[in-house]
Length: 129
Image (cartoon, rainbow, N blue to C red; front, top):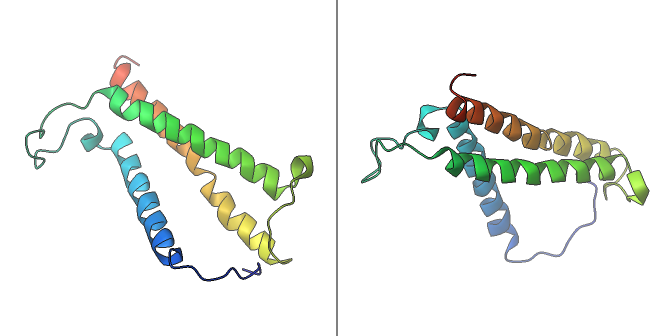
């Protein structure tokens, strides 16, 4: 993307592959905040199937993850708009705009996870609301 070429290392491919699997797993776990399997363990899970999931088991990790992603959003804003002496994206002109657009969409993940978490909290902990 118009940046400097980095020397090849053996761990580049497993790193990118593992990061892809990790982000996909976290994204799929977000469905648990809006689907029934986020409230009750599915019946096909041995020994745990049918048990209710304590709300804090989903709310605490989702809140922490959403706040961490919100921190990445703040960092992105500082980098993208070169606030407070930030050098900006390390790409050639033109490519930096592409990087800013693509990574900017990722930064929406934090507020969206927090919104889903709040909805989950309202549904599970405030049944009269």
